[in-house]
Length: 172
Image (cartoon, rainbow, N blue to C red; front, top):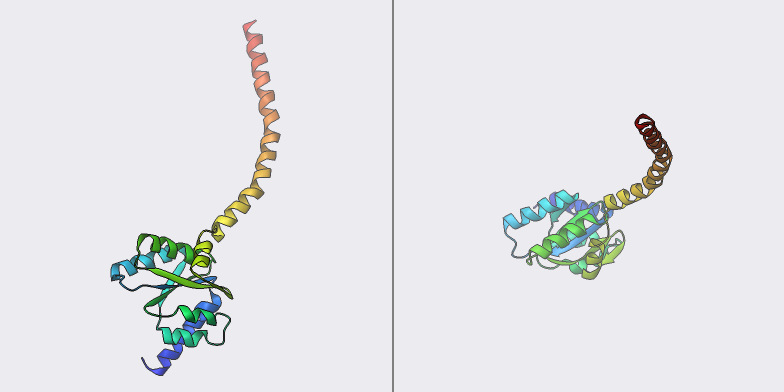
């Protein structure tokens, strides 16, 4: 890799930490190509990405940034899992690590907050952005549905009463 390529990689890694909602750093020693493809697939489904980067270049990218402490996790064969959604990458990485013990989650970053192993696990247990939006929409829509039901109920009650009266009149 020549100097220009290294500079491009350093810039890309810096962008990952700057623009992602969460970045998970994990050790992937022993993963087969198929297992790594499975990890990438799961991350893609969750709306995230996976990036294998040379530790020395990642440390250069993190130097003099709020996430510089993440450099401590960059030892051995490391992979970065990241997503815009502050929960998606952590959830996908935790799910994969649960199924495959070869992926060891070391820590990560959420914005300018450095996460240890327990922090990544806690973030993975939070509801995702889409789940929160669905909950809020459900809360907003529920009162409207209740009002519509209340307004429609008397009309249906009146219709059923009229139908009963009509049936009694016909029977008499």
